[in-house]
Length: 363
Ligand SMILES: Cc1ncc(C[n+]2csc(CCOP(=O)(O)OP(=O)(O)O)c2C)c(N)n1
Ligand SMILES: [Mg+2]
Image 1 (cartoon, helix red, strand yellow):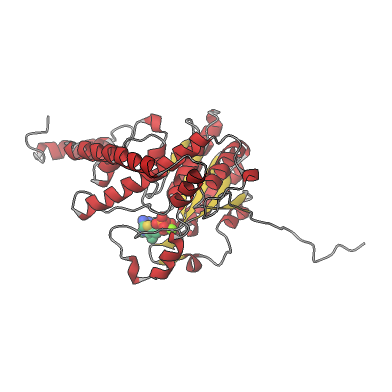
Image 2 (cartoon, helix red, strand yellow):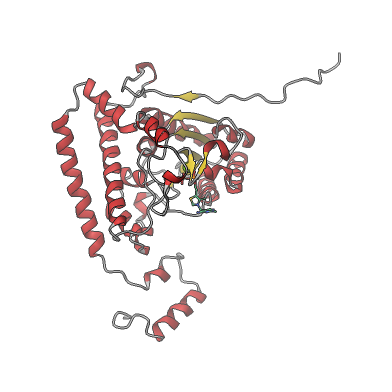
């Protein structure tokens, strides 16, 4: 019998998950089994904290008290849902917008403020936070993440590596190379695509002709799915499942969310996108829907909100205070680059000291 020339060589499908809608109604049949009310309250508090810390950093930047900053507002569900799904032993590899993940992983906010004030010390987090520093070159964190995931497998630590990449980042070669490597070697790599619809001024529709970003995983033989990135419950569930499955190989989750603010403080989005688009996404606010959910269950009210905001505002102000009192040692720009001091760097440091660059403090 002749073999049909029209046989299917491959067929794929990308599923989309939403558990809680914009009005705060949750589909109980999809609810993650391990999520108690108090854990959902934790999620809500971290989301509110992330937004408050974001607003504070933006304000500091506008006052000349912080350097160029990339706001996260609108992306809180993607960040907090995935952060709280990670286990202590898992490793978090960011790009430059995941301040909410750092906070939910217990990173002291003063460390983040130090980074945005331009100090090296903001990039040298203690190992217990299980995080790489902020990474600005787009998608270069992907091969780092894949390599670190391979190391976890080789060393049998049982940890997963959770790496974040933007919609724009998925067009870089590094993205495909990392997924291809992780796919072949079955490295425990979970990739969160934080699809916030814009890569500076490039809209999602001009980024790729692919219908979803998640389907890019298929080319590497890696499972991919899409979730409502403004639904913290869906992001949590998808990430938790992906971390578990990553013991057998990599996973990709595309979180469909929206960058409500500018790309960074060096950008003016009114030049390239409409107010109507921003307004439409504000209706899908990731924090509002959790608040509505909690209020319907009698777990939240205005008084609790006010108390939370006051407590968090003090927490953030104390952290800013610590960061602003920090006295930098200029030599740290040499010591935090490698795990050891290469000779070439040692020579540069010696020369700088000899030239008296830091008179008075070059002990
Ligand atoms: C390799 C590289 N090219 C260009 C840039 C400049 N740049 C910084 S962020 C960015 C867009 C990133 O968009 P996306 O990946 O969607 O992440 P988002 O900023 O939306 O979070 C660009 C082009 C860079 N930092 N690195
Ligand atoms: Mg983007």
